[in-house]
Image (tube, rainbow, N blue to C red):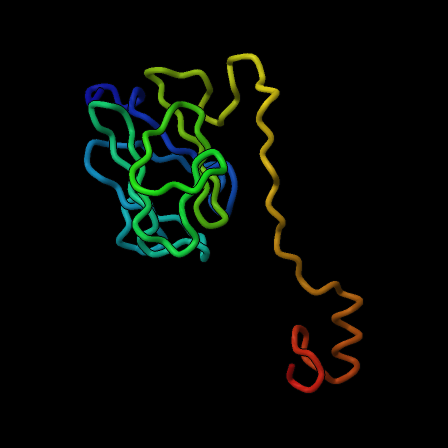
Length: 155
């Protein structure tokens, strides 16, 4: 596989600030996080500096949470310890969603579209996005003399 990097497993950012970026998974452990020293640095303030690590082994690709605050989720299940990844897995860390693609056993393409029949027993809930103060409310609060996001009386 080292002679053919296109056959190396791939993590693709499917949702979040760095959507579309892909990373090849190698035999050396690669730390995923927001620190500049992380091998797979993601620009997401909801990630820990050293959030998780991924590594290619003889058994496949393994993922481990490094004690992150918000946890590491695979297919909407929080992982504890080491988790073996399979082609098509969805990894959520912070507000970033990664899709795992393994060309050696591919049932999906690199962006996560399945080649198999769709599963009817699997429903993924959507996560709510943060909502800012509506412009009308912002103008009303500012006209009142207060700050947006601060209740009168400092509460």
